[in-house]
Length: 613
Image 1: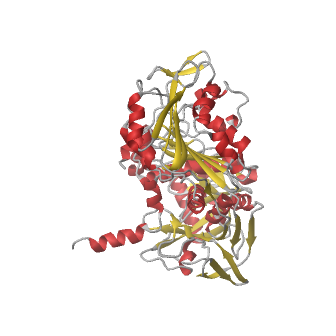
Image 2: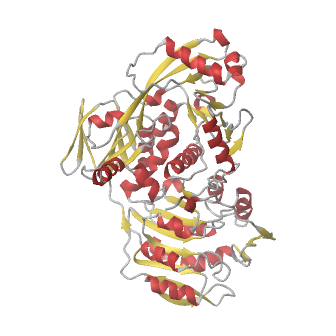
Image 3: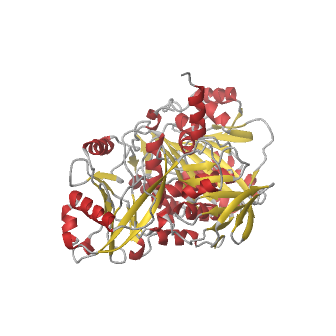
């Protein structure tokens, strides 16, 4: 897929005609002027026989709906209401929708006011994603419903999806007014992403749409339309439809830091019992610093790597919102993050990101300071240990202070520990570089980067600081009346001992890049109360390893090499693993999945070996 498939988005232009939103570009309303919910119920809910199908679902069933044209979310809300009313309590609904021109938050709020009693409407508005290209995952109804919003061109986004659906809602603007969407390439993607017996419904009865869908493999028929529209289309693929079931499963997560806590929480919220093993307890390795910064490095180039940095940051913000964290000043605050470039190259990169259109100003703005200074509006600083504690506080998660010594597979996975052994269907290694002591992965090389952070006593002036600042290092507002100043970055240093010289290096860097803040902390009299050494685990291409372990029996997974970005990267990787383990739609596109896959290093080595000398 080319980078231009993830080009900057333009929000929908809305012409409000009384209570009806109309798209001027297509001269078409978003829903019926007479009765929008009734139209959706007739065309899409009844057109796909959803009430009957939901009611007939067996226990632990999963049902997926695909849609072209999310619009105001009315179809999503009506499908959710039907599902919650008819489906078993342990069933799951996955709703996947494309949208090239998402509504801005103000227009969405106004549209949702048309249905004040709509279930989940307030939650949809609260979780509405930024207008950035790619996949956006949101959870509703305590995890029973997932929405995967694919923001971008429908064909381009669906090509990155590999999850067959059970029913389709075709709801772009009228074919005569929006011909770019209703094309053979789209119909081919719908067929590729359909299961045997998948159904389809659309408000249009246009002949070229019916013929195009037939050529793609759908059996189509005209049926009575809604209101003044005489006819609409329904259809289905060949075969007998059978519900997709989710078998009971168990999981062991090794590591109770940010990666492990996020992985455990993602599975627990989907009804999986999880055992977390860590002999040191919660967040006592690299995740144990007093404070960490929720941030990313914006770019103007939507490569898979840069899209991961953007998507994981926005995804982490959604997790924090959904978990209502931070809950108190001791947890930190999402009060924005200032970024000051440390050199001309980074200043130019930041300036390009700012004008690229890939970052809406609700998320990123220019900041006062050196050229290229940025303000991440919704970032912040957190206590990683307190965040991990909250993530692990779930009735389906148990934490055991045991060290994993070895792994064995004999029909299921077994972890031998210093206290005995534990069995599970799935093992997630979330213990950074120590994962390679438990499994040998060919071609995989990790870097262990020593970092020392200095804890500096707050002063009367510094207690007023609200934003974390990233420069060549970083500085956080006070937690427990201490500021985190750091951190050193030493690749070839394996000493776990803190050093006074490293504290002086941190303060010297602060003096160079933030001299006013250095002065406010007392300048030469700044008081270093404590320090902490941690080892960042990083891959050679700077992306995490998240996915199945290659050349091993099924059920062995990795979430490691998050470097210094565990707060921002771990939640998205956790949801990716949960989706792969539980056969759910992926929260990211296929190119990004491949970029994170642990097998990528083996693939690159194989390609190098095949290349002619």
